[in-house]
Image 1 (cartoon, rainbow, N blue to C red):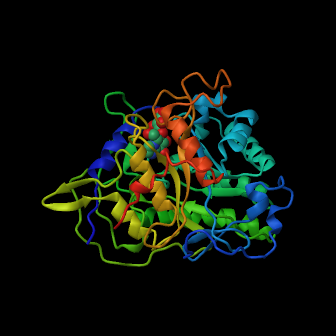
Image 2: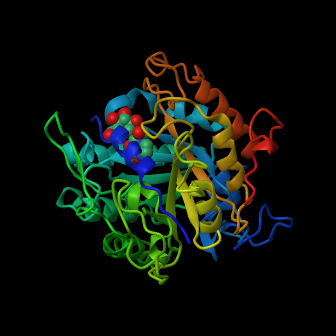
Length: 415
Ligand code: IDC
């Protein structure tokens, strides 16, 4: 039995639309040659791991070994473009130990749709910089409002992904996230009621799958054309990437904290293509062990829910914040630790889960890792408290640093 916990998600929505199978770490390393790492800087993540693939439920490298990528996500370039230069990204690689950068390209919200050519060009510039530095990058078609990836406002997806896949099929470092956070907020416009989130406008897994089955072939056919293995394609899940196993359940109850289902019949509506992963997002101060209701201690327990989901599907956490879902508020270190420790294979599937942190920016919100004004000053290590924490996490996870002030063992979630 599983309750779904919409109330906190809706709280998240208010904030975000309000303005503009492998076991844990491998013990033995396979000796398969990594051809896809050729041409990338020596000892860089891409040189070491080459073309990524999904084996069972695990993201693996070209040699078939489980791999965990950990890095940062950009914010919207339209708002804080001065944060993303070759130097700032190089600093993230050298000083922060990132192995992946998520390139969050908003489509609405003053993004891609205002200048498709300009945004595509920018995306390519960033992809090239990541390649030069030998890190992976995630091309994020940042769907937000409206929340339906099938909405005509997102009609540019085919052309955009065709262009990127055609250009980069011979490269190993590009991953695709074809729709950020599907959600049921369908309208925005006037200032008194800028968006409307309704049960009727619910975006179901079937709608996302229709979109995915349209876009995945657009990408994969470009790789087929040059006889390259298919890249990793990450697909959003309903309710802001929080009903993560919707493809395994018949219908989904939705909406506004009013309509919570006790149980869903099981089905298998997973996508059939290879190298597909499903998205999970969390904002630690809201999405955690939740609360008790009607005498049920687990009424809303996101940890418990995801602990099991990691045994069912290959998951990529393409965005998380250590704060509230509006990107602001308390920085919840211990709650974030709990998630990140779960990502280290301490889950029902012993899945190693890759992740990107929101956000590498100097926006005023507490989830931003740089202090306001840092980008203009090119002060790439002028950190907020969230930044100090995340930088240490990346040093531990990617750099092997010993630091007991993060990922504290006392925060392990035991089911
Ligand atoms: C937020 C930005 C904010 C921007 C808003 C757009 O921080 O500056 O005005 O988007 O509506 C997400 C989204 C991400 C949000 C982020 C923080 O993927 O676009 O960014 N968030 O609210 N999901 C949950 C939180």
